[in-house]
Amino acid sequence: MPRPFPPVALAALLSALLAAPAPAEPPFWRSEWPNTDFATTTVESWTEILSGGPPRDGIPALDGPVFVPAADGPPLGDREPVIVLDLPGVPARAYPIRYLTWHEIVNDTVADVPVAVTFCPLCNSALVFHRRVDGRDLSFGVTGKLRNSDMVMYDRETESWWQQALGEAIVGELTGARLTQLPSWMEGWAQFRAAHPDGMVMAEPDWDRRYGTNPYAGYDSLAKPFLYNGEMPPHGIPPLARVVRVGDRAWPLPRLAEAGEISEAGVTISWTAGQASALDSGEIAKGREVGSIRVRDASGADVPHDLMFAFAFHAFYPEGEWMVAE
Image (cartoon, rainbow, N blue to C red; front, side, top):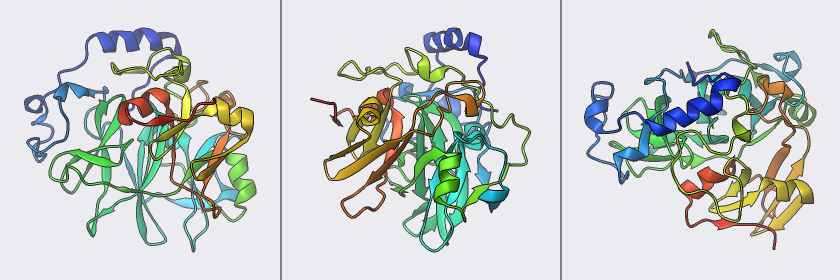
């Protein structure tokens, strides 16, 4: 099971967990991870890695999902967020956040490309990776661990640990390896159907989960992130404000929403209404409006990016550039 918090008790629970984090050191983990090479790592201090609650695979990643035509898809709300992957030669695919909230990783193959579709609710980070590294196809699961409140994944082949926000192996045999991020974006379900009438949508997984509900209700309105003790963002930006990350630059979402479209640093970022926050209301479809983002280069091609919380950008890109209004 994921980390389900009743809305009323969420803030109190987070405070208690922050005050008493679980032990974090290889001897404590070895019984659960006998094949992980903890001697090889880029992590400076093991105290950076904390238990998020569930054990290894307690949040079950999905493999080989079933897809159906969008016209015959599940009854999603019009503004429900989906991750869109549009690779050449095949219809665009939509991965509903209502499923990824409870599974966090989907191992899929699209147009013969092995991909990992990932979503970390605690960072609002939705990234799609090519899961082939040095000619070897990897498949990913959820460790149940967090670093800077971001999901730590693992590959089943070497049991190396990977930082989801970076797509980088941080512990184990593959330490230092990087996954290639593929262009993808989040948008509302109605927006996907309108843009891709022949698109496909992931069918509901065969798991006993409360799909469509948000176990983190009210999370993106909190003053402090879950299991995060790092520095807060500069410029007075709230830690749980959304920012659009492109490379090592971050654009605050309110600036983009006000402008509608901004062209800077070689990219054009557009904002349109039509997507609900997945981390607001207890029912995802009823979340407050946050809008949808597209990032394109000068040729109009989609650019890999992330729509993450400001604290996570500051944690993983401490020297990054904040694209705030002058």
